[in-house]
Image (tube, rainbow, N blue to C red; front, side, top):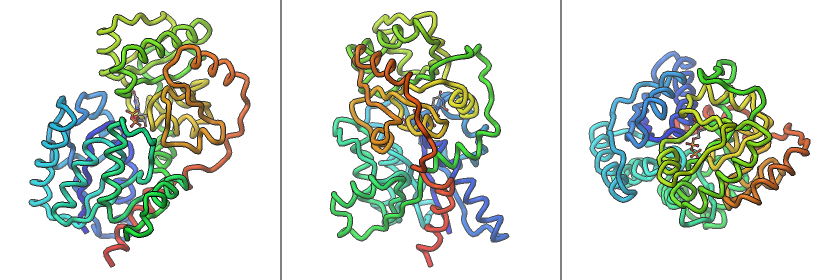
Length: 362
Ligand code: UDP
């Protein structure tokens, strides 16, 4: 069985690392190469610290195809990816195209496959923020609709699909848990302290969503709040290149107690998650990882796809308003939560994917 995996952005490297490992383990167990995985890297993220480091640290098989498509508008990027992935698929003729998450690479991979009548499997299907201005929301909805198997991480994702009429569509919906949970279990024993100076007590923060970075008012609100929080507690901020350029563009000043560092590799991120006191982020992945590491999370957005974390009080949506963020931060400090709930599966989400792909063919 041949699978072409299309990836291109940081969170997809992490997700696909977990699945690639499960494929390799499957072949080892069967003592033959039952599954051949071919990786296509669209090039959406390309810096050494946004891409290469994940391949090295997480032993992701080397991409057979590097498409080098980046730095374009959404339409141009998705269009060029569609054309380039189609060429790969015509050459490789896979049984499956596997896509992860909600980026332009996800949509382009799924669409190229669907047009060629190649089956699509979508990992992290069914998630909805119900914010149709988010490019990710469009990517998710369209990718789900083109997929033969939708691997959903949560009950709320199943509910979303039911509400969209998926019972009548005929695709398989499989609740498999979260491949990012698999990755965190696998790699936490290898967590590494970053080379930069990391304070003893700190809050871990990341900001990169376009809705925050591209909007001066929101970005200022967020950094005003972080500067205020940093009067009491150090903040470690691995800085996404887009955010860095907007901070410079808007001449936003950062407090000395905000340790802005370059984006870190996954093993360093696991160290930071394990050692921080709280997470403040607009990242999808980090909202869950905060929970995996028993940290409360404040999410710098007005909505989230990971609603169960909010529902159970592990995560608070704080938007981009200074006062709301600071007051939620103060409230969260007195919280003492029990994190023993199982929200994201048993750490076998990737094995479930591999078995389902094989069984579907039989
Ligand atoms: N991440 C990382 N280094 C960083 C920032 C994030 O390894 O400097 C990891 C993070 O732990 C998570 C993933 O990248 O697993 C999330 O990616 P991102 O926030 O870019 O995307 P999102 O999850 O919002 O789609």
